[in-house]
Length: 111
Image 1: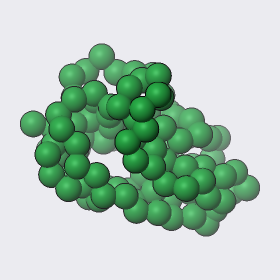
Image 2: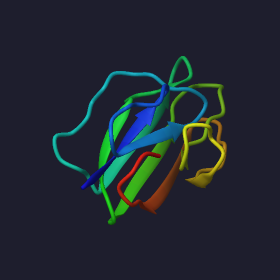
Image 3: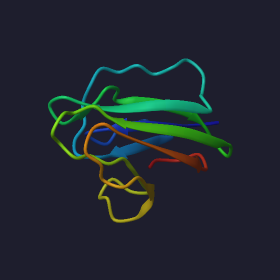
Image 4: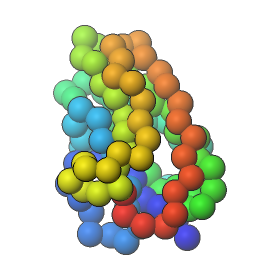
């Protein structure tokens, strides 16, 4: 089973994961199969370079966050709920050039 990363509005899809940084939006580039390693970039106009990311459930997944939004501090965080009340893991806020890596293990579900 897979978990799915989503930024911006909460997806109605099962197994979705909500990306939380300083904004969202960007083209959908969902891989056909779950990945164990991925890079998420904060790009100009306060958004991510992708809106979804399918990752393997119940396995370690390495996510590298890169802030490329010149002059704007950003972070990356994973929340259990769409209301951003229960933060599971996240990076520090960093000014570009900033890069941080998280390793997460998520059960199937919506994050």
